[in-house]
Image 1 (tube, helix red, strand yellow):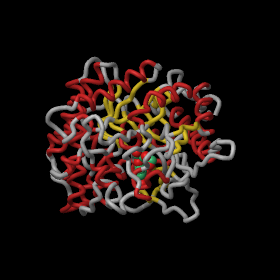
Image 2: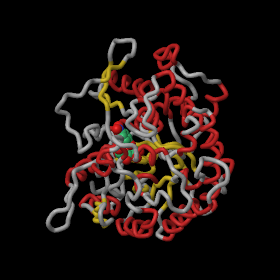
Image 3: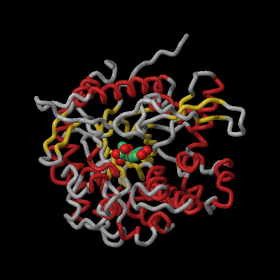
Length: 452
Ligand code: PNW
């Protein structure tokens, strides 16, 4: 008997996600301090078209309308991030009450519409003052993050926020921020320093989990939102599936594997040799503090097969004509949402998983009737959600899904040139126009995914 999908569980949560610097704007308002993304985006040549997050979606001022928009689409949960430099303008010291107040008002508005808030503490907008002291290259930054995370979680849990993610995509800010320099702070530090600052970031995560629990009021669920490489077994043979499982651990060795197992794999350490990070057993214990939930962001897959090499798996190069969406890195490989959560479940048995991001860029414009008919995105989302059903059928405890993103927004180094929203934003007028994919998502939510 083949396994048959039971579809989405009754209490499955359907959400949308954003991040502070990508949507808020108002970068000089209410006492906010500068972040590394203000510095980076104002440095000529770093971001496409000289775009900055100075205004973005003006969400800081328009959040009420946007919550109403979500409500109209039937969206049940909203993942947002807190801008660290709004709450601690220089990274530490005295909190800025006006900064926190914005998030208190946002949460109140979400609750008034029955939308469940999911809070990410660090989605890359580090206070510039901390970067000036070394950023993640300084071990002290891990402790500053934990203080900030504990403070915010204490305040937001007191008004009913129950889900907290310490960080978003450690892999991305480490590898793009300090490895190839395409994201803030725009450094290329070399592999020894990279491995060490990666370790500091993990430590910041672990310390923050503990600090959030220590300060939270009532029961809260704490986790991390990470983007593991999702290795798809290129054929469904037992050997290729076993290879994909090995690849899941090894390809994510300094991120999810370290967090969920409390070790760096032998292969990771051997590969770095003398460049391996300095770490202690106590630090690994902190890094692997047990989590209540795991957030997983998936956009793409890799394809692997078993091999007789010592690695035991081989990652296949993609042919030049492999299809992709508007961002060249965003290959159309919806299997990531099947094999990603499934292999994570098989490797580490997390208690609960949320897909904290999934979505795609598309060249979205408005037609003569003022509509955005983004059939490419609908194709992408429908296929991903169908693949997610397979993960559920194989027992992965996925409790919710957040589409990236609610709104077109500041897409980091691509500026406003790449649109990921299910709602179109005219950046000149700030006019919001739900795309056809928003209508698609609304209907999927109404049918709890049984109508895909
Ligand atoms: C994620 N890459 O970032 C982030 O969590 C979001 O803030 C972002 O808007 C979204 O995915 C879409 O890009 C990534 O180049 C940015 O491989 C770039 C890459 C991966 C993830």
